[in-house]
Image 1 (cartoon, helix red, strand yellow):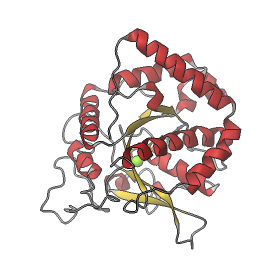
Image 2 (cartoon, rainbow, N blue to C red):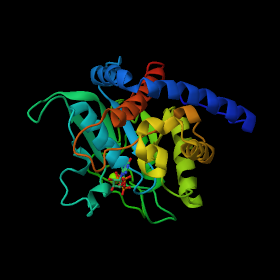
Image 3 (tube, rainbow, N blue to C red):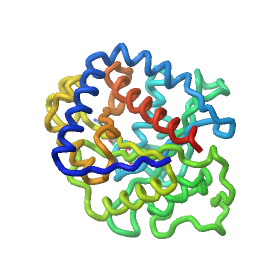
Length: 297
Ligand SMILES: Nc1nc2c(ncn2[C@@H]2O[C@H](COP(=O)(O)OP(=O)(O)OP(=O)(O)O)[C@@H](O)[C@H]2O)c(=O)[nH]1
Ligand SMILES: [Mg+2]
């Protein structure tokens, strides 16, 4: 079922933040040891429900926040080499037309001829933008959460998918529905604009009503401050990032212990343990939240 969080006063928030920071800090200190454990956990994960073959993870957030890069990064970590499935089948990254399509990204176990997949799938969507008529329509995200949006559907910022369209799935299975909603936000961006924030709140409320667990990923921590640019292990020492996470928590109503700072693979051509550790920690927590939720229903 959905997680209900109450942020009641700054004293409570401070205590919670400090507790979370202590836990996270000790995690990061032993991060490389945890990486192998978390990697194995994610690779071997299977749901306990017969009707749900894979966890469906839906990413949403402002344009350019790093949604597609997060999917690419997870794929790279699981494959052990840089891979960019969320940018596949597209002429050029700068074209961006592909971001308008709803697509399920599965990650193959092994190389190209393998027919088996990890039990996590990702749905990447068009980014949220200011005002009506641009960016993904929030109603489309709500339909996607319920499993009504078929793969290949092209988002239309002006009007959401309707029941009479062929891209509308009238009878979604438990597998088609979204199992965890991930808000993606950049640590290196200015305050979220009011109209985007309102859309994010609507989406979150709909997810809560549907009993979908929610977390947030704070991307681009490598660009947000000198300490993390120098060394990602400084992530929980950085006062600047702590403030950014606290601001995000207050703005979107996701508690600090459900916000995960990460750096996506963006320019690298080899994988890196510090990048992997932070992302795997986020994935592991996602899986745990979903398990708590789907095993109850
Ligand atoms: N340095 C750095 N760059 C990042 C990170 N995540 C994403 N980027 C870069 O930010 C840009 C936007 O990333 P995308 O993954 O396309 O963002 P998106 O949210 O999918 O964007 P839309 O689909 O247009 O809404 C790309 O140039 C990425 O390489 C990160 O953690 N660190
Ligand atoms: Mg994208």
